[in-house]
Image (cartoon, rainbow, N blue to C red; front, side, top):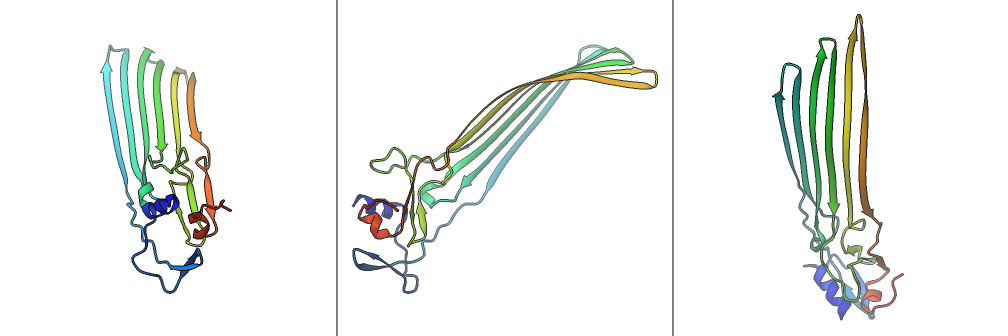
Length: 213
């Protein structure tokens, strides 16, 4: 009864039979049909760019820049009850100081911070007796219920950067030197099929709660 209730909740009966196709459950031929799924298909993107310049003196100038990227879409690789949002966020902020020592010697000092995160979660659906909802496949029906097989997964990366560029003109020569220092802090979570895969060669095996193949 429990397994049947889960099946009825996430893969309801088709409206009409597809030809003469049937599956056997307990020795009884059960007609089957097409399980129609309508999935949203969209990507929402928002971008923000801002800048500010401030002249401190004839020799010094400050420049600030900020960029923001936001993308949202729907993971629709599962049946509708398991559609989940997928988010991607990026921030970049920089502050630069330009100093002119002389007409032939200039310096740029730049500090920047960037952050990128993306998340592909799973919903809060529950399967009785299990900690999380697994992926359940029925080979005779050709369908799968459960969240996207590679979800959940998350990624996060923070980067702090310090750059100095010196430009020195000496006669007919132009010399450029400096350094680029970065500190990167990154973390991610991805364990393929960590919620478990249950593959049944027949609907009958699932409804009678026999060990999957």
